[in-house]
Length: 129
Image (cartoon, rainbow, N blue to C red; front, top):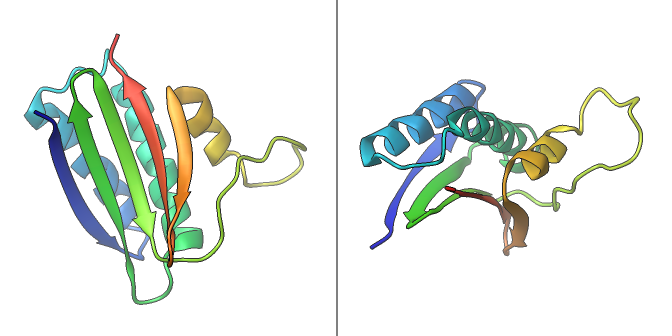
């Protein structure tokens, strides 16, 4: 039976480390085997939460972090109610930002965006080996 837990976070800088701590505490509590990839999980949660705070959450609203462990799969979702659709920037190296989703795409075993009305969910999957 899958395990699932979610928590809402406000549009605030402190939400990024709080989301990261929530994710790791949950996985440790569950005894989730992510094949020694806790650092990858921590970085990906940080990137998705940062993007939600900076680009996705309208003022006065929150984002939701959801973790689901189903057998060997860990699915992480960050949902916000903001507009736009995040995308991985492939070209150029001159920008100061825009590399976070490239890191997420490289570290996770699967990654995508589901558009809602309003908002979107950015999700990724880690597979335990």
